[in-house]
Image (cartoon, rainbow, N blue to C red; front, side, top):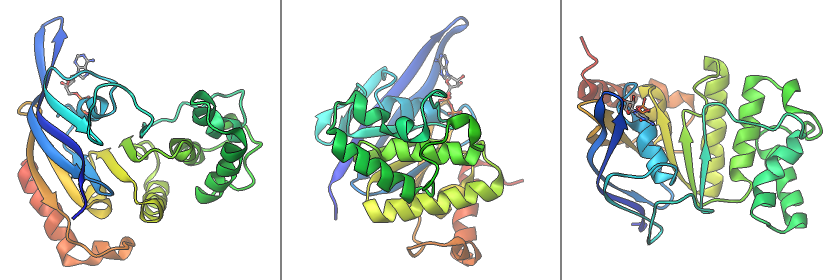
Length: 254
Ligand code: ADP
């Protein structure tokens, strides 16, 4: 059994709002093992993004304890990479220059970063697009750039907030398959936020099911489907069982 890389204990988050305190997370505890693919799933407003922001050190927790790789967490850190629904790319920099940015900011070896950038462009299917500018790319291609940039400084943990949520169904499925391929090759720890239950089951080792009652971790579902996965796995009766189990937990079956 691999060691835990992230441990959250009784994490709560209360936002101060104009209408008073708002409980976004209430007493959330979990362990994540190195190399696991975890999804956070739940309806809008249940606290998924808040939890991911706390894990990524972008937001402070109100109560509880959080450890990442054996040290107390709370600030952005180089071993954690974050990706969002829309990748903010610098329009005046080429695709290659955008991917190189995190390495430059962190002052990593230029030659190594240059080589790594080419490998990554290849890995995400953008070979030949390095000299283009973001304005010339489709939404799907921009998220490919975002994925390459996420991997540029080789973080151990990837935190992804609905990274393909704004893409059409077909592109999203392709990106999910590529993400799985990359994850299988690199064995990074992934925490993936989505409100799509099927996507969560398809991708994950375990699904953290969150409910707005408010901001509770309702339960954790282990996905015992074989790997490596292709879309064929969606025909497996076990896939539907798991989707329905999560739907039941979320109370969305009528
Ligand atoms: P999800 O990602 O599941 O849609 P969020 O984490 O974005 O949920 O939000 C959880 C709750 O916290 C929501 O009620 C939201 O309105 C509230 N919230 C999120 N961010 C803030 C903020 N910066 N200030 C006040 N309330 C917030």
